[in-house]
View 1 (cartoon, rainbow, N blue to C red):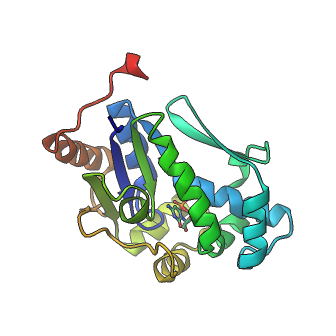
View 2: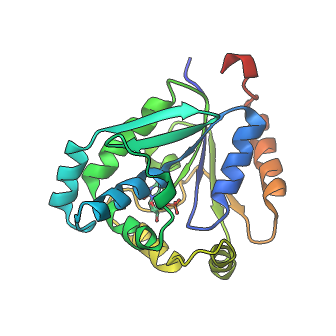
Length: 220
Ligand code: DC
């Protein structure tokens, strides 16, 4: 039987990560941050002097570089060419480059294949931009988190990050392949006023009403 997947999509700084991580903990599911994978490739391109907007050069990188996704401690770790990009993927230069590289179809194809494989390993809470519209269109546990843009920009500032949130959203929503958009069958959750625990509670309630139950810890 297929492992269940909870899909959480939404714009930058909508609170997706906190909510998805919290949900995964409550359900004993594996948390998957797909933005981290696009960020990892953006970082690698910058390291190698590859223009993240150059489709041909990025496709070459995507073809050549070994990518390994592994599950440990309830979440997925990404390694690119044997290196762990995690310490670098929130850098300002990566924030500025990631939407460009995320528009390259060859990169998206490769990552979608890898993301789908994770379902064979564990039940998932996966967050991103295209989880409900492309990666796992068949899941019935589909949510789109949104929040007021002013609140989102403030949230990033509080996290000490200089992030081009509005510009990133615009680029993510305007791209030809897998644009940021709510799946028709996703439940829209407005995260402007509620805290993460309240949102997690709401989502859990909907998931349970649709037949989802927590994974048994010893089954993981
Ligand atoms: O979730 P995040 O802000 O860390 O994502 C970084 C960028 O990666 C985002 O601006 C667009 C891209 N992204 C994507 O195109 N598709 C996904 N499933 C996840 C992220």
